Every structure is written in C-alpha cells, then in structure tokens.
Length: 324
Image 1: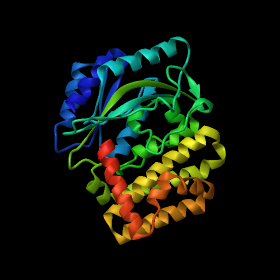
Image 2: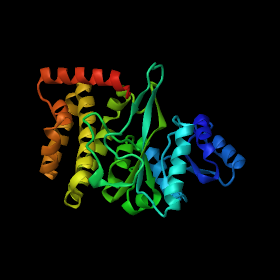
Image 3: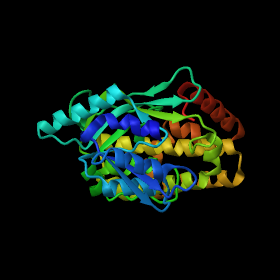
C-alpha cells in the first residue's frame, strides 16, 4: 500500500489521492491512510467506511472525488513515474485548450511476481495516438486485446452522469467499471505510455485462477449484469461503440466460460450454459456476434475433446500474457 501511495504523490497538488479504508481490521490500512493525510494535507484524503467490498470502495471514491478526472489504483499496484507525468501534462494541455476528454487510455503492464518478462497491453493499432478522437476513428480490438480498469482514466462527471453503481461485496466489478460508462463516452484520447503496473502472482489474489473458480458465483453475477445492460441499451449504441461493447462482453463471457470448463464442476458447467442461453434470449444479435467470433468459439463448447483444446489454448495464453 505504501508503494502504491508513494507512486501517486509525484502528482503533487494536481492530483487528489483518496485512500478508501474499506473497513480494514486485520492490518494497518486505517493508520497508514491517516498518516498520509496528516503528512500531505490538501492532497491526500482518508475515507473510512464499513466494509463494502471493492465495488463499494470505488463507489465511495466516485462520490467523493473533486477532480476533473478519476482513476482507480488498487493498493498492491502502482504507477510508472515518467508515464504518470506525461498523462498529467497531456490532460493539462487539453484543459488549457478548453477540451475535456471523456476517457484517456494508456497501457498497462502485467507486473507478475517472479516473471522475467513483463507483458504489456498496448493499443497503437486500435486508438489514434496523441489526438482527440471519436468512435468513428477507432480501430478494431484484436481477439486477445481488451481494455481493463487499469487502461482507463474517466472524466469524473461522465462517471456520475452514467449512474453506474457497482455491486457491493462482490469481486470482479472492474469488468462493469470498464463497460457500462462507455455507453456515454463520445470522445477519447490515447497515450501510448505504460502507466499502470498491475501486480499479480500472489496465491491469495482475486485473479488467481483457483480463487476465481472458488468465487465463480460472483464472476457469473457480474457477467449476468453485463448481459442485462447491453440487452437494455442495445438500440442506443451503434458503429464502433457497439463493436467495442460486444467485444468486451465476449472477452468476459470467454473468461467466465473457460474458467468454468477448467473447474470440471457439473453445476458450474450448467450455469455456463444458462449464461449463454440468457444472452441468446435477451439479445440474439449480440449472441450471434459473440458466439461465432474467436472468443465464443473457444469457450462455448460441449464435447470433451473441444474442452481439452480450450484448456490447452488457455495454458498457452496464460504463459504468453501472464494474466493470473
């Protein structure tokens, strides 16, 4: 946590750092938060609340933020100093020109413990660089490309206008965070810098494969909400925005399905089937779009041989990208 906060402090008084102590009792989170607030008044604010989970902590941050832009940095992650400075300078230059972008994208690094090579998620062929752009100028995300919470800096007002409230006491809500607000996004900006270092590799982390399988009910809950959301708003979106949102839902459907396949749990496999049936019933157009692209083909399988192929693909992808 100290490493995380120290990586944010070079923003000086251009940045407001909200430390949300989400009912922590087994460590020194509350004391550390108060320590930094006392040491850096006007920059750091400690917010103490009863435990509400990751989603509740993010909701509290959005409600209390005073800055023009908002991003989430988890307590075991950190920001790259040079990229951080460039992001702040870019946002300031845009503001000096009277421009507020709805989203600023940057790259993130899988900072995997023990890994010799750290994999980076970049988007140079998807987003125009160093210029404000709309959906019409956006390229197409590749099958293995995705935008996570770590890639996104939102305009704070847009988050509030979206009305998004993340579910409390639920993991994996960052998928909702990187999905629902895009219904309201009109203009964007991309900086090809490696801003966010996403730390993974601990056995107890929420993204550890076995932990995710153990919490699959929460992943399914998040995925169901995403299905309902795109079904409710499908007629409001078009063009590249529709492609982006369908692609992202496809990635989450694939992740959920593949982990269920790897669990070998018959009850979970039945729930996976129900997920796909739900999407087909609620939004047949999105189902057809996702079911027959690469992510759908490798995750919506029924036969043992096909499931073995899925497992093999997953293992290779895990080694290539180091995502958990």
